[in-house]
Image 1 (cartoon, one colour):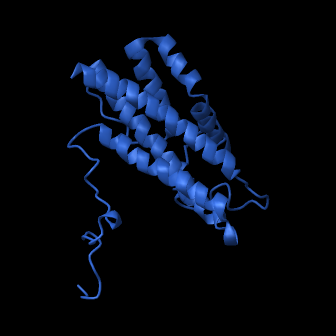
Image 2 (cartoon, one colour):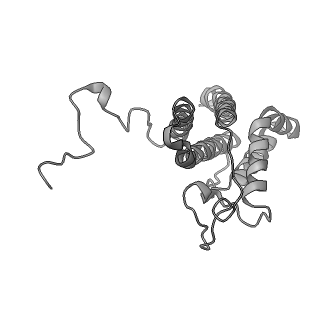
Length: 209
């Protein structure tokens, strides 16, 4: 290795200039999904704040993609963590679906809540998290009107798996995102998913162990 290049995985003499990958991780624990989700949600909010405070050179036009990537992946991690929590509460050994389809993951979570606490509780979860439900509906309508593929890679690549362009590439019309509204929705959805994690994982699952 070039002596002038320092390893990325190395120590800085100033502790506040070090990131510790393992400090919030626990061996084989569901909470790791929530901890990673926190990072993705926080990153999305920080990037929104950056664009709202100083959008010189219209940097928001390109940062919007990692914002959506972080937002959606934060949702995915929380939904999967919650589903694994419900699986343990139900004492069922079902592997978590590897899909990135947020609508499908939300549906599985609702089904697990129904199995654990009944249909009324599952309906309350959907009603209580109106912002998430509406966001997922909007994604479905915007990204995939024919509902044959979730196309959640729209923020990672400009083209689909079949090498067709995503919805924002070929249009002459502006595809606009209200950053203030987006930050508000991210914050509300994040807070609500945290509440579910506190209730199902920390209050119910940890109390049973």
